[in-house]
Structure formats: C-alpha cells, structure tokens
Image (cartoon, rainbow, N blue to C red; front, side, top):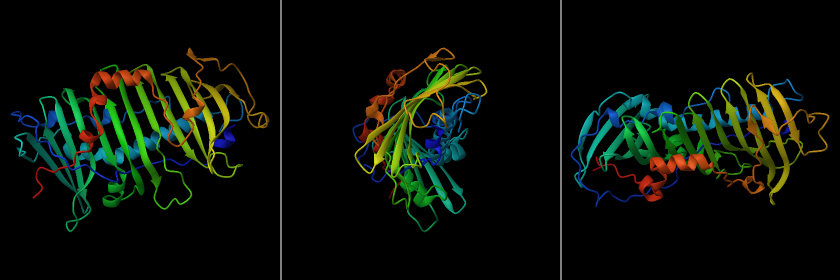
Amino acid sequence: MHRFLVCLFVPALALAAWACSSDSGTAATSTPVTKADIVDVDELTIEGSDAASPIKVGDPAALLGLAKVEGKQSIATVKAVLAHIKDIAKGKDPVRSGKTAAGQDFGVWEAKKGTATVKLVIIRMTEKRLRYLLFAKKDDTSAFKALMTGVFVKWAPNAGAGRFHLSLTNTSDTMPGLDVDGSIHFYFATHKADLKGRRLVYKNVIKRNDKDGVPANFAMDVLHKVGVGGRIRTFAIGDIQTKLDGIELFAMRVLWKNGLGGRADGVLAHVKPLPVAVLAHVHECWDKDGKRTAYKDDVTLNDKDDPDEGDVTKCVELAQEEVPDGSAKPDGTDPDPELDALLNEGEATAIDEAAASEAVDPEAK
C-alpha cells in the first residue's frame, strides 16, 4: 500500500480578511505588558521524536513517515508566522508602551528582518487575557499587513492557552519563502506541565499557482504527553495514489510511546474529481526504531507490493482505531476528545472567531 504515499501535497495558508472591531467596552487595565506576557512559541510548536515506503515487516514504517512529513511541514507553516514572535520578543520587554483609547495597557516589539519590518502588539484586555497582533511590511514604502491576530489566556509566565488566526496570504505577500494562500485557525494549550496540545484548522489553504490542487479545509489535532508519547489526527492531500487519476486524501490517527514505538490507522479516499469515494482502510505498527512490525489494508490487488503481516489489533499496548469514513474529505475533521477537554480547560475554545480576528493597531494614525 506504500505506493499511495509517493506524491504528497502539504498545505500552508493565509487569512483573506480581518475584522476591524475595537476593544471598546473592555475594562481599562493598570498592569503594563512585559516579557512575561510573551507566549513560549517553542511549546506551541513542539514535535514528537517518535511520530512524524515499506513493502514488508522490518522496513521503515510508511504511515509513520507520512505522519512525520505532514507534521513537520504543517509546523513549518505555523513557524513561518509564529517564529517572528520568538525572534523579536522572547525574553525582551517592549520597545514602546502605551494605553489604548479604552485605557488598556499595550506593549510593542518591533524589529527589522532584512528589508522587512515586523511589529508585535500585545494589548492587556484583562489581567490574564491578552490580545495579540502581529504585523509586517516588506519595505519602508509598504503598509503593514496583519500576519496574525488572536487572544492568549495567560495562566503563568509565558504559558497558557489561546486562539490565533495565522494569515499565510499576508505572510506570503510580505515575507519571502512561503508562497501559500489561505489561513489557519490555531488553537493551543500549554498551561499543564505534563500535557501540551494544539489544533490547526485549515481555511482554503493551497499553494500559490497550484491550478490543479484542492484547497485544504480540514483540521489537525496534536497532543504531546511530556516524557510519555502522544498522538496526531491529521490529513494529507494530493496525488497520493499515482496510479489513479485525480487527487486523493488520507485521513489518519497516529499514536506513539516514547522509546517503544507506535501505530497508525487511516482511510484513503479519492476527492477530485467528485464524487468523494473511499478507496482503502490501512493499519500499521512500528517499533522503537520506526521499523514496521505489522501491517494490514483492505486493498486486495496490492498484496504483492505490500502484504498483510503481523497483528495490527494492538501495537505497543495501543489498540487499533477506526478513522470514520466521513472524515476523509477536504473539509474533514476527526476531533480528539482529550484535546477538546484540554482546550476547554485552558479557555481556548471560549475565544470566538470575532475576538480572534480583531486587527486594530492601537498605534495606527
């Protein structure tokens, strides 16, 4: 079945529109914004060491490899925006401070990056609720564009939960190297020492000049159990099965235990041209070295290339799961209940779309 893993399209994105409401009606604050209010970007983008094209048991695990590619490139897309926060603000107090018209304290971090200028604005809405605004302009003759907006709920210095909207369109317009349109609604929770999580909701994400592609509108869930392992529920879209005409999508659940191994369960579907049609269900196990220990799919014509081997019902104490067929579509979702609970506890899901889209610069003339 590894033949369907050959040509993988990996998305990236950008926000097409931004709300322009104000913070009027929110109480004035009297606590200055400082470096303790800077979210730890490294914790937002943490990667797992054991999760990330075989033919038989003992070869590198195919679904593990696909998960690593998808996970790393998705995080690379997020880092294209969030890294600016780390670069210009981590460990530093604001270069400017002030009060909004509503009396809220705000701080500004600003720096040159080549010919571009990047500016982070943080507005204290309440003692623990902070509005984040990240702007950039590609040169001194250009206007600032919003790369990111959102709200951070601070539970401890540099840690908490929130919802950020990342504009890959604006990032591609102002900073080199991305060339992707669309946006990501990025939910996260880092307030617990032993559990970190994030959800990436893709909104019309597609590579620029990709006339044959399908815009991604699916969601990706990631949970990291610190020092233990984790799991990912994710999607890949593109010409995955090169022997078929059109575009395919692979929806999968990946679980791992540090130092032991893991498993993946997934559904492959044809998504373009319509109609969407499920092609295969796939299961794979691997050991601590990422080598396949068991494999099974329900495709009867590829047993010579990728034979069913071993027992996939349980891998390193991780039981087999079934990804719902309905998830295998460009706007598919397969929410992780434990991540839901973590985001709820951190108050990330209490931030509505309008609040997370606010893009008013308090310094604008």
